Length: 462
Image (cartoon, rainbow, N blue to C red; front, side):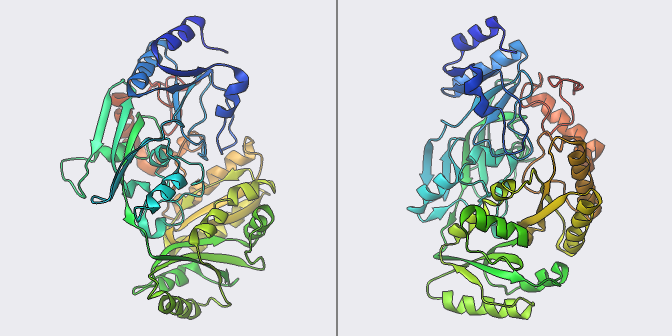
């Protein structure tokens, strides 16, 4: 159903910016990478902070949901609108507000694309380490909203580690600024931490301040075959033991995923075994010695064969980042995200394959091995009962192994029913109390992250 005429007229009168209500033009806002689809009733690109605050006031008055959207690369439905929802398009909020070489900080609009920022910072000798697989399209606002990570999270951690400050418009219309430019602060509970990973349910980001790291002199990608009988529980602690080579990424691709990538993106990955993908940081003077150390460490831990070398590691991660698209071309429709401690990795691999066999679905396995973070990809209709049961059983498996139901993709709509497994009933009640303070009318991204919302059909008021 379209917006009520009075609401539409009020929106165009009160909110400075671009308003789109044509159904054909709205189709690009109807889905993300999760295969969920819901056409919004409108999309609004507010001109500035004041316009965004006016938009929130309008939405509160008309009881209309608002869903912030960046690159639309979310995998659990975070940026898909509920029925009757309005998408808030932040793609044009892509200003680089400040780059401070002295403080190693950058302030940006939420619509800045991750890889674009990477290229801009290169001339300053600095970089923002988190590089999700979707870095060619995902935005900094979206990275902060979902606490995105990526291959380099092994060394550098997820986005949460690098967000120094946020400015956000809450569901009350208030403008909240949190964080510090300093490297540390001890002024009570971390309000910044409440917003990072909140998936647009508490506030919509208008500016993000990020800490930066100096660009390593050399970053080399190395690809090695994984022996069939390798035990990750035994091998990883030895491979990454101190003093270890300066690995910044330790990734895994199963044989089928490597082959799919080669077909999809003309890659040059070996296809006769599963693969270990690593990134080595070094200096020009030490690179040869470091590569020799790495080769010895590989040999000592059971890896054989000559590695395929990518002199520019970003070429490897750009290829690796296309895994999801490559697998979708071959029927994969569910892209999952769980993590367990290193000591339980073998059980996660075995348990995932067993549940796929039990439910008669194909599974492809890849992910951030160094973080214990696996991305099982299942060939199954994502909207079917079988898909729901597969996801449930995978979540239960990860929790049984001492892990998490989402390592970096977020919760969104698809995993909201399992939130109490992660935080417990008391923890969920605390989160809901924070939600009520920041978004008392439930207009911000209802149905996502939190198990229920007053603006989602069938949802209970929090």
